[in-house]
Image 1: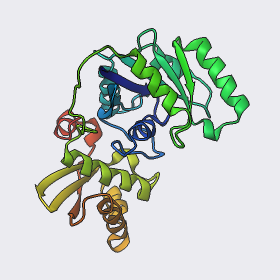
Image 2 (image 1 turned 90 degrees about the vertical axis):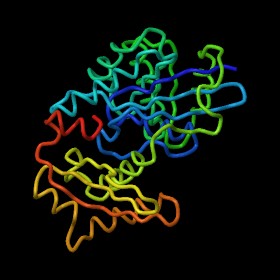
Image 3 (image 1 turned 135 degrees about the vertical axis):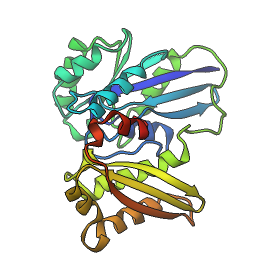
Length: 279
């Protein structure tokens, strides 16, 4: 039996969360085309007869513009400590750039590099990307794959398992994630807000569950400006209703989800506000 931790790390929007969900065969980390969708370390547990891998999904490392951005980078970097395997994820559809090289400089030698989104790139582009990654990123192994379709994912998982030390189960065999239920509901709401509002207020939104008396759940949506509050609510509450409907569809039957919008000015730059939200 082998067991250990594997961190997924990379720039924003390279597909780390989608890769984790595909590996586990179920959704444990929210996804969207919006950069910095992942804001916390999210652990997903893959248990097989011969191994247990605890995957750690991380925020995308980027050039921060707010205190929140700085803390997201710190959260990602902290996930590299005490890890058995580090997996650097890069995008097959974008050139290997300064951001990728910066992240590569943070990870230990002998790491794995994943070139993701090969389903959206030509074979020639994938080949060029692999050559570029091998030349500048300093990893031991390289895996072209598609987190969206699952192509190439099994080979990656096999390599990760081979690198783990022998050891007992770290989590119960039936556990897939250690994410608390309240955190998961807040993340589902934020995911649907990102999908519905698109590019209008993505980074200014935060969500938290303030009351949980099953089946009643109260979720508070924080924005930074009065104008953003209007966008999130929508005409006659249309946006909020759609978000609530989409989120409830992913919750157990009978859940009663109440959504409220509150203005918390400049919360991304205020330490106490970030601490209240768990950042």
